[in-house]
Image (cartoon, rainbow, N blue to C red):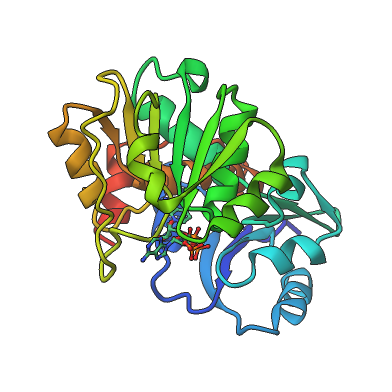
Length: 276
Ligand SMILES: NC(=O)c1ccc[n+]([C@@H]2O[C@H](COP(=O)([O-])OP(=O)(O)OC[C@H]3O[C@@H](n4cnc5c(N)ncnc54)[C@H](OP(=O)(O)O)[C@@H]3O)[C@@H](O)[C@H]2O)c1
């Protein structure tokens, strides 16, 4: 008897808006691989039963999104160092009955910059990170690990930025929200990780006129693709990279683990996910 085709999915609540099924579905079709990737609506409180269900149903693993990322890490049998450092999992792999937790958001963030801004290096100079939520944690950890000499972390709620800096260690300086404009000066990388600028949210209003001419700006918000923050950066003559690529690149390690092929991020994938 041959083994059944691999099955993976994305666990979240709500899950209808997730672009992950379109993303992985595109790769499965493109490479002609057998298998399925399905949306899995799992209510808050039901993650332990859902993970038991993955095992019982023979899943190869799953992505995990809000609100289950922290609990998924706690429930896994083993975790990668980067998932433990970030304190949350977005990728689960079932290997020989053991549930392995990983967090690929920081990987996706860096790969998106490397692909979208040729020659970009984390050690080029200080990074300014706006926001200190769950995604910021992955971004800041990735930047430190990639060699950023310092990270200026600005958040509306200063205490949340302080807690993130304490948890991660490294060259992270926290600042008040009112200091954001001053923190632009001399930064080599400018990152929005707040939800400001997302469809339905107020814009992020920050002048980038004081940014160094070689600075790179990126927004992890990708709906819309050109956020007010990226529009301001472009108007100031800065290089920009939009946030969709982070979503696409973070998916690569999971796809390879579940379906056995290292996938590529290209224009056709971007289009498939944008039109989903
Ligand atoms: N491209 C990707 O692959 C990717 C991956 C993950 C997330 N994202 C996007 O990144 C964004 C953040 O996600 P998250 O999971 O980190 O969310 P989160 O944990 O809820 O954090 C939200 C952040 O936005 C800040 N914020 C919200 N409203 C604000 C306002 N009116 N003024 C100033 N700051 C405000 C929060 O500040 P406080 O701490 O003061 O509340 C916090 O820093 C979302 O839009 C999400 O869709 C994209």
